[in-house]
Each structure stands twice: as structure tokens, then as C-alpha cells.
Image (cartoon, rainbow over all chains, first blue to last red; front, top):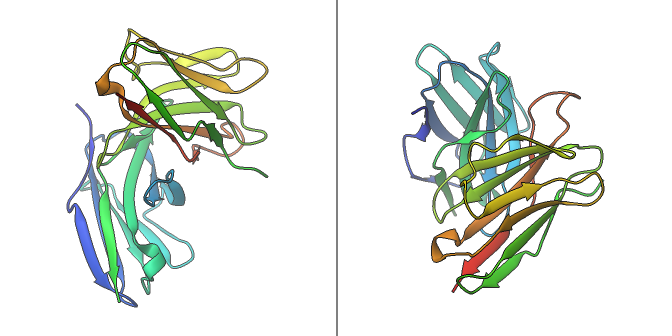
Length: 112
Length: 115
């Protein structure tokens, strides 16, 4: 079936470096994508979203890139901080379906 | 503006008992979604409700699970005759669907442990 998956389960970066988290999706009808951050014991926290009519969107220290040709999504975090350590999930939805389909998550660890 | 609220935060049940999980959406949100998360996995969609209506329950097991979102009060996810495999974190999300897009805002979750 359709799925959203992540390339790497873990990512370790030095504090101050940039982080890139990747996500592949398989549903060609997906038209809305979200990145969530989940800290241990908490619910997912919205980071940034992007619609399929865009290929890039920027927020505060974060950028999401969408490549519809290869069905690839990435989250870039600039100047990674210790507070960025968490599991990051990509999620997508399509058409009239309102539920989100989540990937399996990437654990980001920021090293001092 | 308070966020999505869920209670209880932790729930312990013995096999065969019933579990009731409550979710109060953000103010102004009339769309509620329930997701289940197993350890070290992503969230899996269960059910999507609007006030007094189940819109999509394609992710919810046909037996023992039910959900409602009454005109007044919180949304309830009910699990009857719980089994150990029901142990998971259950998250509720709400959306201002119709006012801007597909953004879903999540509550802190209820962690269900079945003994």
C-alpha cells in the first residue's frame, strides 16, 4: 500500500551545524506535507508544512524542500540547538482524505 | 487559546476491562482525529470525526473500538475488553478544517498500558 518512509532512523549532528532530515513518499496523489517534532512523552508538535504547488518553504531556522518528481521531502534545520533533539516525522495527506499518513520517524541527536 | 487536551495522560487497565480516552479539541476546531502510536513507530490514523458524525473510521479496528464526538463535550475513544496489544499511546488532533487547510494540532496523548 501507499506509505511514507524515512531514509535514516537516526541522525547525530554537532551543535551549531545544519541538519537535514529526509523523507520519501510513495503516494503520487499526495498534495500536502507536514513535518512534526516529537519529544519524549509528548505529542507531535507542528514545525512546518508545504503544499504540492510549492517546492520550498521557509520558517524560523527551518526549511522544507519538496521534490515531486522523485517523491522526496526534506527538512533542514539551521544552526541546530540542543533543544532540537527529538524524533522528527514527516506526514502527508491527499485530496479529500483528511487523515495524515506518517513516516516512521528520525531520531535527531544534537551533540555538544 | 488552550491547546488540544487529552485525559487521562496515563491509563492502566487489566485485560478485559474497558478504556475510555477523552479529547477536547482546540477552541473553534470542530474536526477531531485519533491516532495510535506504538513504541518507536509513527502515528497510525484511526478515525476522523466531526461534531456528531464519524467521517472516516477506516483505520479503526472493527471490533472493540468505537469513537464519538457529541454535540457537547469531548470526543471519546472507547476500547472494550482491552488486550495487551492495545497498549500504545493514543493521540488526538484537531483541525480548523475549512478555515485554512489541513493543519492538525496534537494533544499530549494518553498512554494506555494493559496488564
